[in-house]
Amino acid sequence: MESYQDEIIILQIKNWQTADKQVICFSREHGKIVFIAYGARYPRSTAGRLLQPFACLQAELYPGSRVDKLKSCELAAPAPQLNLNQLAYGFLMAEATERLTEQGEPSEGIYTLLQAALALLMKRTPRLAALAYLIRLLDYCGIGPVYEVCVSCSKPAEGDGWFSEDQGGFICGDCRHGHTTEPLAAFGEEARNLWQQLRMLDFEAPGHFTVKGGALMEAEQILHRYLVYQTEQPLKSLDFIRQIS
Ligand SMILES: [Zn+2]
Image (cartoon, rainbow, N blue to C red):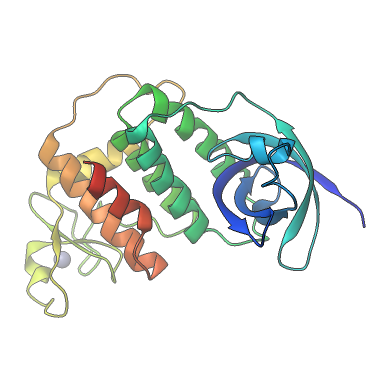
């Protein structure tokens, strides 16, 4: 069987059978890949040592029908040293990427964004870095919510407003009353401005801007609710973030 090479970022690692690891990663050229690293739990396994969350590796793999097999790997970049808070938000980025992407759908854009966002996670407030990444990831996945106009009546968004997960965006005060099926989250002007600012953020040169706590909490709450709605199940990393904060 012909092997292939790719640069990968590790998203998730699980133990598999007695001595192996099952790994989910996002690659530069092949998108999301699930593979088994046989023998990776043996103490002297090089792959076992290198397969760590968020590691960037040059990997050689054998293709399988659903799950590939690791032949070998080496470090492509120094392994990131993350503190607990950075890890928590890193896990959120990894979990959302894993849930929102499909195998066999390559996206170099997502790969480059993930790489830049992990670097930003170590330099800036992890909460903001994760929020900026997730907002952009939704765009790449084609499900970025509408926040410039009301999704119900198309009027430009002004002042106070709300957010509807199932309609995928901003709901104005007039249209809010037609909504009886779900309690809507607030999506005010400051939160929408922050959303816009983070969506346009240059990850290489993020600059300095001030963020109001209320707007950050509102944008974050909307994003988390929307992620859960889109992936149709709770995100484990959000529980972890709640536990440590
Ligand atoms: Zn409206």
